[in-house]
Image (cartoon, rainbow over all chains, first blue to last red; front, side, top):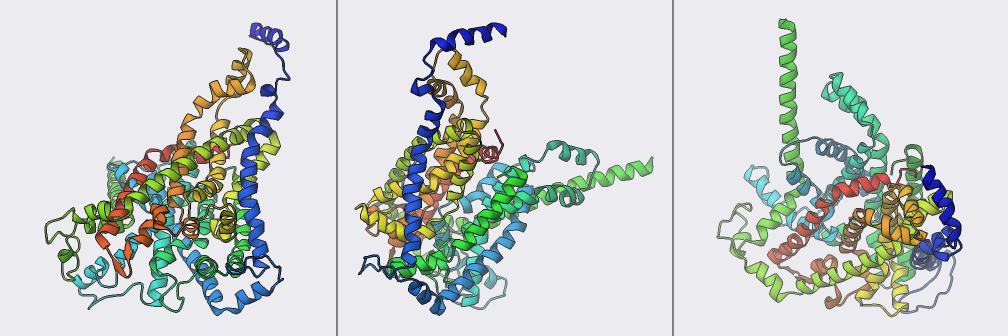
Length: 311
Length: 290
């Protein structure tokens, strides 16, 4: 031990400590610069531009950036479709994430137990999340087909249905369908995050309750779930972000329909206005209404992370 | 004695019922999650006449299964182009992500102390800024750079999604490696950078693999940027190509369409499952204060 210490002292001065590859400060700055520049350039600039666009009157036809104050935002909120989209965004997000809390917790508890064929169950259960959203939505589009839906066939076979439900053709059912698909695809991700957090629960606590012979339900509800609460919170916040900002499910399943705009959400409305309609200012203005929610969610996640040191 | 026996028996039966309940729940979870995929998988092998007869049992091959529609997907549609575009973009994004994130994560994990922690959180927060907020200005930026209708637009923009999460994941892996290891290499005469290259990087290789899988999956998933930047079929990725280009007018080629979804979904899910445990541990480690 003392020999090594002597060696260090002997060798260190001999090397040029100011060599730039040895300078911690230089290395730190050099290491972080590319990442910081990339993020500043391609997130920072577009972000500022997003805000500027919302206060301008830029369209594809007239791309010069003239600031017009609150005119664009006023036009955005004067459109009843905007309010419909805002309401749908919140309904989809709140309902599906309320379901996610329950289902993802249950799923995480199942997947942390040992049983035969677990790898297959895990593979199948994660499919909704690992599959690109648009492709997952395509499988649902066919599952909810107006004529050939297999769900309808089962209902008919059970004598519960005469012809077809037409899941995506009626406003209420279309809303329910979108909520189902969101819940279905977020549950696996939330369960994975919850499982990650459960690893952090000291195993002595679990073992102790096992030895106590604490019954399954008591152990689950009085020990495991309270300990999991913060990480469940984090999982749901991720779920909220994924649902509130998503336009893929609506775009593939309903295009915002059935007419007029029954399932339109802020993200899809911003897309239809800004990209398909070419009104960049109004599109950006519509999307900007997501910002306060995102800031609130980010603040919550930070608080959780501080308190628990898990994220 | 009998009391004890009764107690033991009831404990046993409780355990048996617990196992049964576990298997039932696991089966139900798998069925609910996989149901649309199950239906798609059956669909892709069905003959038209079988599929489009309303009275037929949809879960059964009333006519013999056929590979006709899968063949159609590969020979008569642009699916192969979409797949190669997705692979190309994914590969490029993975390389950019690793080159940018590895040094940043190392710096944040070891070199800058309190600042590192704050910057780490800041970078993570960037991950929470969604494409939904940025796709309209980003399409202007992409046009200004002359990358409209080009795969390069996606290669340039997707790292904004993957870098923050990669830095976060890798920070966890770097913190898990004792500093003594690189100090020892420095004693042996290497510079700090040299020591890191020779000793630390090989040890975070699992983390880099996790980042590779994750960055690739995220770029294969992305929808809104691709839909905003690209409209020519030859440059589309799977994510936007399949839903927009495999539909002729109002006529869906359902079997080929579902085949496209299944053929893309299964390999991604398979790879993801291989690395899931690594991903879970990386996700928690990111927060362990080093």
